[in-house]
Amino acid sequence: MGLEEIVARCEELYDDLDLACVRAWKERHPGAPAIGFLPTYAPREILHACGVLPVGVLGAGEALEIVRGDACFQSYICHLPRSVVELGLTGRLDVLDGMIFPATCDVIRNLSGIWKLLFPTKSARYLDVPQNFDAGTGGRFYEDILRGLLDDMGRLSGRPATDEDLARSIVEYDRHRRLVLQLYDLRSSEPWRVPASEAYLLLRAGMLLPVEEHAGMLAEYLDLVRKAPRRPRDDARIVLRGVFCEQPPLGLMRTLEKSGCYVVDDDLLPVSRWLGAEVGADGDPVAALARAYLGYDGESASRYVPDGGTKGERLVETVRRTRAEGVIFACPSFCDPALLDRPMLQAALAARGISFTSFKYAENTGQMQPIREQAGTFADTIKLWGEG
Image (cartoon, rainbow, N blue to C red; front, side, top):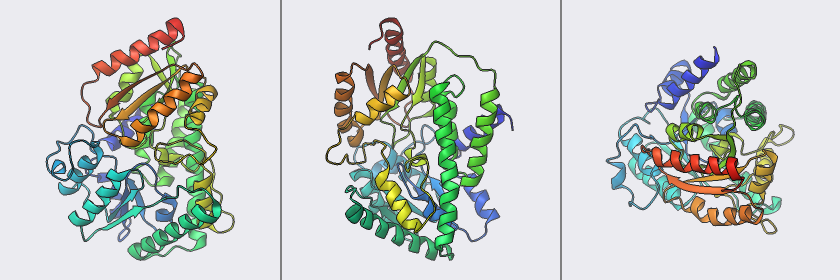
């Protein structure tokens, strides 16, 4: 495929609310289950090792009117859980054999309970994760969680995974993580080659495709885009933060591009790179996954900063590493973790004279003109005066 064909395929997957690609995968793998997971993180290696297809359930964006989903939640929470319930009750997630709800916030925890009531015959699991990063405490706790998930997925698929199966899955996902990080590195060094909207579509495609297929797509895209005759523009280099859970509409990413911003780093779909560049398959693979989770040094609103750490230090390092000229905080409306984190992150930036601006969005946001004007003004101030 050429570059245009790859991007078109990714956009087709972005619009695939009925999960036609998952249905096609299940037809090619009779009896194999597919399990959905919500942002921000899921141990996809565990599912893969048991012959289960991990499927990112990222909401419906602008493509679905929310009716029944609104009956399950109050109005003062983010849009994502209502959207996910609507997808389920309209049959669009029927192809899934279950769901995993990661420990992100109270809303997602409550959604896991609502899901069990609405779909009692389907597998539903709340994925608890450690907030204590001591290997003897949080590490043992998370190993127990992972072994329980491994047993559940083995029973569901009828294919219990051996240590060798899980080690092979870790190798596959390590390769995938390295390719994703190559994509981020290329966008940081030559952002005109990798528009933010294309990178976003590529990441979204990885939430639906088997890891082997998506790794091949990433490798092909990287090879093609390095050779493509794309020219640089004098756009402002910015870091995007706050989009770790409820994903922005594609139009928002395109709006940032049109406003004169190069997005050189972001926290979109952190599951793609949560464990760093490599977990490694030596020794006990479950223990390796737990160690990688504890040792990941990325910053997220859903992840506790241990004693001795300061919120915002990692963001400042990212700004310096990517040579960013400012930070845009784009937080989903009513996202408590992102909105509670933002003042601490802004304080860290302000202390070092780093420009920033902020706005809120919902996954179904349709009016992009105010965002374009705000982001464009921010980019202009950076280019004209070097400060926001």
